[in-house]
Length: 137
Picture 1: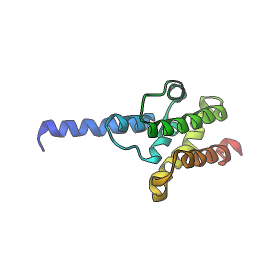
Picture 2: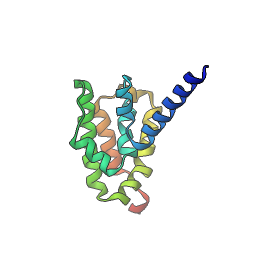
Picture 3: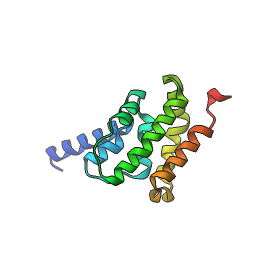
C-alpha cells in the first residue's frame, strides 16, 4: 500500500473510531453514504453527551424518509433517556450499565438487522425503564 493510501486509510479508521466513541456513528456513516445498521442508532444514546443528545433531538438533520423514521425513534428514546437520567451522573450510569451493553448485544444478533424503528425503540425503551443499575439497589 502506498504511503498516501495508508495515511488516508488510517485517517478513516480514526474518524470512525472517534464517531463511535462520541456517539455520532450513525451520522458519520450517513455522511459516508453507508447504510446505518439498526444497532448503530443506539450509539448516540450509549455514548453521546447530554448536550449532543439534546442537539440531535432539537436540530434534526435533513434526511430521507427512511432515515427520518430512525431519527424520530431515536429522538423519542433520547427524550426518555434524558428524562429518566435527570442529570449527567445518572446518564453516565445508564449508558455504561445498560445502553453500551445493549448496543453491543444488538450488533451481534442477526434478527436485529431486520428491525423497524418501532421495534428498535421498543427494545431501547424496555431496557431504559426496566434494567436495574448499581445505583438502583
